[in-house]
Length: 285
Image (tube, rainbow, N blue to C red; front, side, top):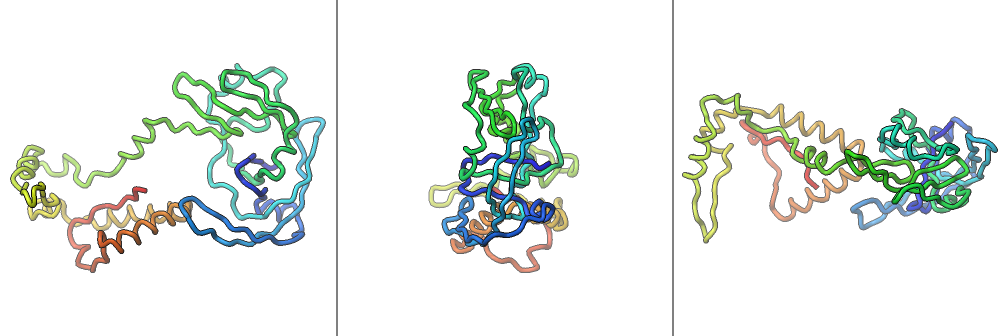
């Protein structure tokens, strides 16, 4: 059994290469596509193998659809599952409903993407309204929930069984979860009042603008902080791992870095820069 994702925003349908190999699907032709990814103005040219396959439903009367799909190494890196309390779902579903996918998180990846070229051929009826903003869409492969499900804890958006449950407070938490460069109990000899006092003393006015030096560059603070190059290096290693899992993140990050180099905001540094305190780096795009 393979998991399938409906995507009306895709002009083509796709199948993962590992499923193609498992089913021993033969290549019937090759197609050249211009891929426009997020934040890119210029398309990337790719050549895909095209295969023909038949998709059967898991429910009686076991309807099927024949499609041609492009073979791709990956369809989506996201975990597609409904992160909603099953009891809440069961309480609003009709008794005769045959849901096409599980509500629980699974290790099974999406192996087929049904794009706009075949999507509506898979619809087997009109969507039925079961709540104010929630609809039940029958398909050849079972029923699919589309819309909003009200949860007392949070409002979750569901579209083709893909739930985005990131509440605003979670986004803010992720934004501010940045390691501080100096923990309060690591420097008992320096009190917050001392830091504020030094900050005020070092303020200057230049061309009607206030200026102050970076605190970690002051001799006293530099001695307190010590050398944390390994900490900064580990942070950047984690960033590299995220780049490998998200190519679009790397492309956007690389574009920003190039712009800042050209504008003179940042520059290449020598080995001497790594002596002393090094600010841990975190991408902000």
